[in-house]
Length: 149
Image 1 (spheres, helix red, strand yellow):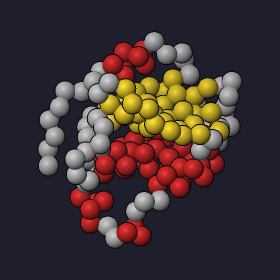
Image 2 (cartoon, rainbow, N blue to C red):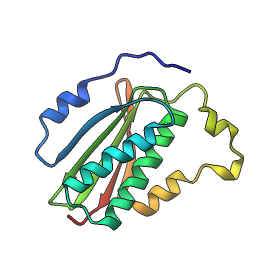
Image 3 (cartoon, one colour):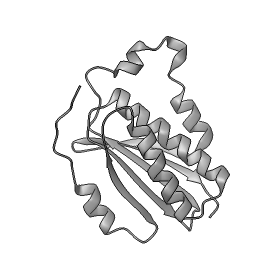
């Protein structure tokens, strides 16, 4: 299925005004490959920040889970936003989407009950805090991972 939409560029405008600790914002294609693309972007940013390997693993898995959930359960557009706070020593992840989809994606529909549904449990274990917030036209799923940089 091909989705046609006009991306919300406000994330890029906001990123331009953020302090230097920002990693940036990226528009991702709303398809299963988005999780691997998000991991590649995140790995590059974490390397630039000199984040410890153990922290990087937690951030990468959290990004993967959040992006996969957005692809399977939400509408486009799909955005990744990364930043860090040297004061709290946390990496902040935001995945925004167009809100709940009318129907789950093919992967979620084809899985048996035990094959999915553990993403939030994983995120609970990996993050210092996580949550959701709604803004006009989109939903933001965020997580903070304690980091060593």
